[in-house]
Length: 345
Image 1 (cartoon, rainbow, N blue to C red):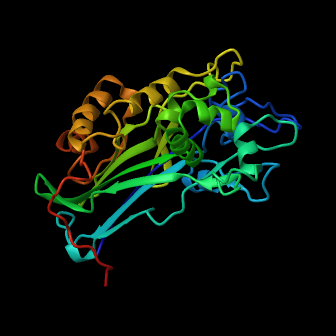
Image 2 (cartoon, one colour):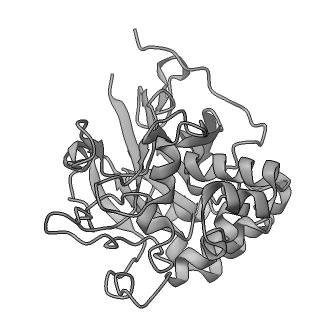
Image 3 (spheres, helix red, strand yellow):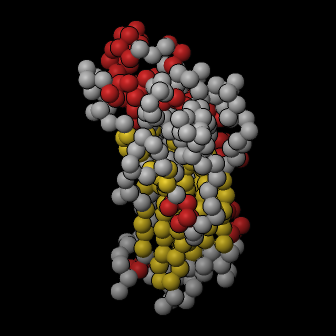
């Protein structure tokens, strides 16, 4: 019996070049703000790459070799993935008992890595090594904090053709920044600065309210072979890619030229990203789901770089038809009719 199978993946990249200052790199050579050497770009390492290959497996195999670490670290911040498949007896119907649905929910988050080479000024690295502070358990790399909302599998029908649909909202935060926020709230601004030795300008909004990198992925597979992978919303920062069935299909813009200039303390999308966390504009900020639902439609309408998609035509349905038919997001918190999933006999 024929099967329909599709998979979509988003990868989130924090662009950057070599930050191996004692070698041939530059201490501030990534898309993170510099703040005159007193903040993010001085604290953490970027992904040391500015683009991904067309092949998904090749992108996932990429690793960073950092002088500070023996372990080779991933060259992406987030990976969001949905796999859908089922058997169809006639190219029109779905055999419910054969539906396969998988995500990468069991995959460990990527590390946030602290810069720590000899001779580099880094307040976070200093805190890691201090005996009187155990904020970070004396660890110079920590797994990112992850939030995940999944819809399950939903039954759909378009012009007599059955199919299935699923969505995932995935977000991640810098664990070091999250801990610093907790200590900032606990100690208060003055004691926090005195304890850490940070300058006041190095504790801006992204410490007071740590922002979240995220992608909202929605995948449809129909029995005639038509498929649609749609990313309804992404965080404005940093850069996101959509892969469908193993190939790079779409990406958000992130021009290198305007982000590596020493005179620029931060780029426009970083500022937008931080400010959105202060308002009910992200799925993981302090807001009710309805507020995000109202926002996400406008965000993708008026800021098209935040929406990514790729579709394949089937024997009867086209990808454009699916775009129209599924013109609203499948929000993971909505209760919908689901298809029981099981291994195929």
